Image (cartoon, rainbow over all chains, first blue to last red):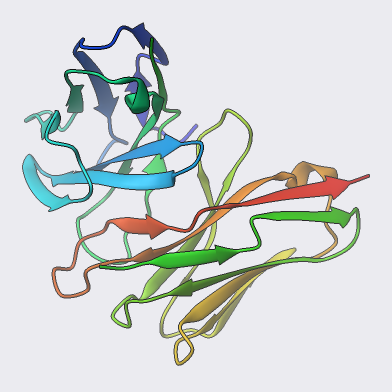
Length: 114
Length: 115
């Protein structure tokens, strides 16, 4: 167990809908990262937050947004869902924000858009 | 931005043989290179990492080598066992100038160890 908690484990929804994925980092970790894993795309970096502020942005769609709350948990919001958004979404956390931080991954949320 | 290429995409070895997975990166400012193992349906788990001030690091049957001049690094698994079967991802730090912890991952190598 990495100490990173993600809920829900599975999510099934329809196209056009909006969902929220939740992540609680390891105790003491201030950075949260979101990754998308599709079968043909590997692990794609979406966004990083550090202590409530956006730190880095990857190839995150405009339909997607995220935030990190004062208690350090993070939420990834996916809206106007499309079939292609079906993927495994991972959250990871690290102690701080800079280069060389060890990232620890949660168990992921499997999103299926039908 | 950083780009990480990983080869091979699949690798099949006999139990007891060695396995080698290679990665190249594009950003010369990258200085942290972890390897993750992902079993089917599970989360990626950090198995070993290396920083740019070190050329090689070993942990039991696993070793990683880094060639900063050539911008490539490799994972070596010796005496492979069936439980080593998994997908292995290499990664590198990105955007050295902005100093974030984000990792850019290779496409993954599916390792199959045949008993």
